[in-house]
Amino acid sequence: MVKDLAPKRYSAKRAILILLLGIALPALIAYQLGLPIRMWASDRFVMRGDAYLAARQFDQAQAEYRRASRVYDLNAAAVDRLSLATVAATDPRVARSFFAEQGNTSLVRMIDEATEQFVTPKAALTKSIELAEVGEYALARYPVETALTLDAKYPEAWHQAYLVYEKLAELDARFRPKADSARAARDALSPNWLLPTP
Image (cartoon, rainbow, N blue to C red; front, side, top):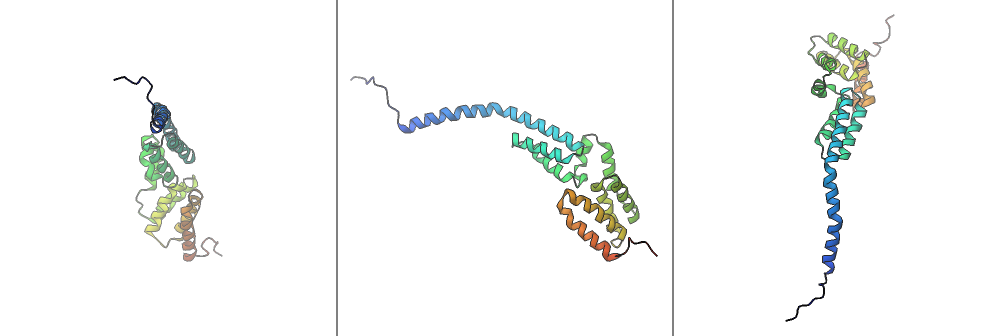
């Protein structure tokens, strides 16, 4: 028996498979080698976002968390913090624990004061006005809502609610209907309440 010394021919399917492996294998290796770098870069973006969030620069924080998600889409911290930064702009109490972890004690104290249980609607309204005067409209929302819970026929509280919701509607359009209904409630209770008495 004589051995055939001629080289074996590969089938077309086998040649395509070898070609695909030759292309895919280096790509897979490059992906696996780049994975730790992408994870590290994503974590850096999350850290930068945390710094912005702690400073209450919500737009910049959201941008950093989005970058972290684009670099490494499996970064759960980036996704969680993005939703936190989105909500915290108009509802800071959801981020209270984050602010406490970051050491922002003055903001934590303001959140606690704004969400405390007020005995009278006037005390709640006064606190809301104090917070609104320093530009803390997201925090001013809590005491004015408490004032309206304590006395739903308090036109000054409805006026303050209108002002607060109007400012919050600039950040989040979901507050527009609340501002409109607060204005309507204020006007229904006392249409001329802001006019000076003769």
